[in-house]
Image 1 (cartoon, rainbow, N blue to C red):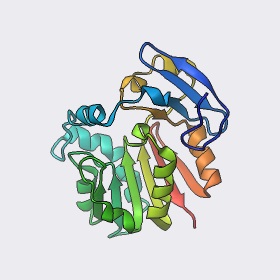
Image 2: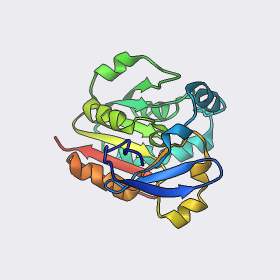
Image 3: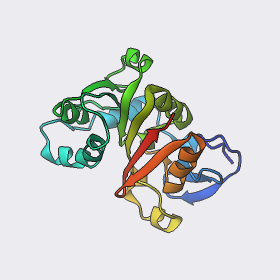
Image 4: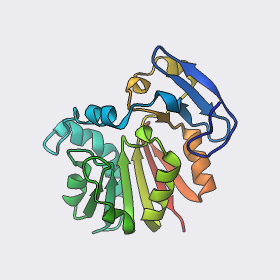
Length: 212
């Protein structure tokens, strides 16, 4: 069995198998994750991301992102400074927030790799359709916590695991770059452990407030 890549718990169990990969689940935080030996190499992973054609002119993409932008705008102060983590090749969420008077820095391991922005702290951090791609979610999670000021917000978008029956027919798991899958229980575990206020907005938006 494998150590949980999020909470490092050693008690994990087989969760599901399909024709391409094997999946395990942590018995503590309930994270579901792909067998690490079945992840893509870096070059193949980036080639997959290069196919994405998201851009700020795409109204459909804007509607998609508005599911996290709108509730975040209701909670952050005017002229806040944030970081869009994993912004991809066509940053759009940052544009939407800047149109509302906020300042947004960008970071992406492949497309905006200026690590200087990871040395500052922010009023909010966003990561939309990012968390499911992380090979080292433990490291990135703590990075997000350190990037957010006390009272600040982390806004996430990701599809969440319901149960193994739904997982068996879930198209989301079939993307070869999707390697970890959170459930509501996973976020609840992290919120309790790290003293965060947690809100679920709809089926795939998660807002966390850093209390201290």
